[in-house]
Image 1 (cartoon, rainbow, N blue to C red):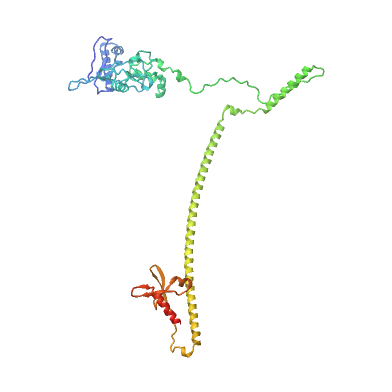
Image 2 (image 1 turned 180 degrees about the horizontal axis):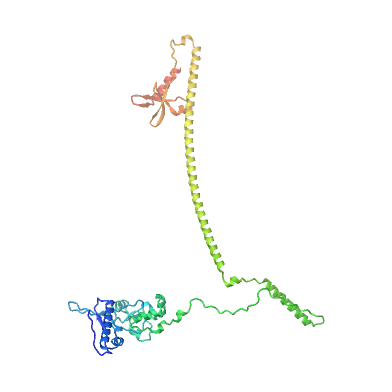
Length: 443
């Protein structure tokens, strides 16, 4: 640490201490404590008042300043000033630090001097100069410290017409007291102007519409007004007195009707709601909220149940549709089976009838016409086949092909061809020859 002390007269002693940039406030406090102990030791040795010597030397007003740093190339860098920062914003009281920027900072609306270092020997720091260059202004946005010092500390107005706010608002914002402000300012040897602690009119005036001046109402007795005794007129009085009595009587009756018909005022309503009424209103709101929630839950449950029922109904409809389809298929199979059985029965009956007719014809024939050997006709056995996508009946004995649909529907044996074992196909040309052979055989 390098400490430089200028030795002058006792009263003009300069107690400024120049420390390097790397040291902090704690080192300054240690130096101050060392100076106090040195003065105390000398006071005991030479028998003088130590407190008076501390005041004369100004040890209570030590300032922290940054030392000029010299680079290796020989270029000198501008000195930087380290200004201690308070725990909360302090108001402007006429302070001026020539080592700092000449611009003003808004600082919660207090308009205090900027703590930045002046750039290259100029008037403003790098931040203020850059902002002025961007906006093209000749002075910073909130003005300069010289402009602030040129007027009273409570009369300053910035270039845009804005004024500093009352320090009481800052105290309210940071929740600090007057004693705390004075204690913090004393650490930096700042004397706070007492007017900073006076609330402005804007702080005192309350928001909202001003109360209207109401005339006090005359308080009267509660309830129905008492009836006044009717004035009895004696015979012989003048007509004017009788007329006056009638008018008074009518007015009295009118007042009585007004009192009866006037709505009663509720004293509790005038005085405001009681705690019981507030609690009852709160309970009513709570019950209404619970009822609304219950209705909402019931509605959601009903919608959910309706969806489930709709889903179950859809499943039931699909199941019934499948059952109906299955029944229809079974009925179709049964009908086909019955048709085939009926066709077989018809065929059997037809064959039986033909056989009976042949027997009868054989009985009626002459003996010469009867063949020496007559063989009993055997029934023709057929099987169902499918050829080129169509169904036919094929005779196992002769290979004759019959129409399947005609036999199933009508029971008729319609010959359509003959099966060719060589080509494994139906020979439809053989149908005509087969019919001719059958006709010749029948003749």
